[in-house]
Length: 200
Image 1 (tube, rainbow, N blue to C red):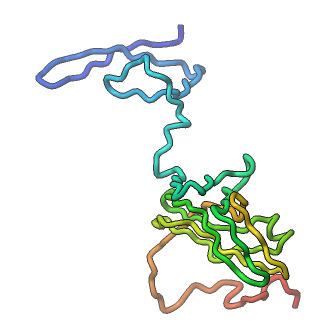
Image 2: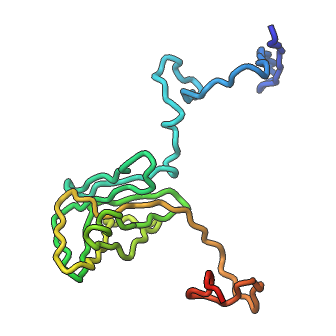
């Protein structure tokens, strides 16, 4: 038996001495998986709570339906980066015009992120539909709306439940703004607007 047992002692309040055995596993022993969170006085017969369900509230995308017409955002596939946003009501985006599509969803996103409302490739390719003004800040709690631009020559009809955009969560950095007299020189310098990748 490669395990070793030791007795550790500790002093409790009022001078009470206690001892308890500690068992050291060999290095080759597998590390047990955490399947349940136990607190002091917890019943060992309680149902198991898997570690995957122990995510902090701050690390989740919390969604509230404002009306019964709202459709919860879902990812189209396991590898999808965005959550599909659906229209809560029927509407028409006029040809060469724009419109605001309400989702009737209010969201709370993880800290240090923002939600980007991005176009869906199918709508852009087949119907010339684009998304504008797609930034949802961390502290916004209103109705998430999607501004759609119709670049085609025909009206675009939207029905309840149609997926009109996708919501992508992205990490952000908000450093302090510091005014300086000079900036470090770089090889590129002030070149912009197509200055790179052009043969001279």
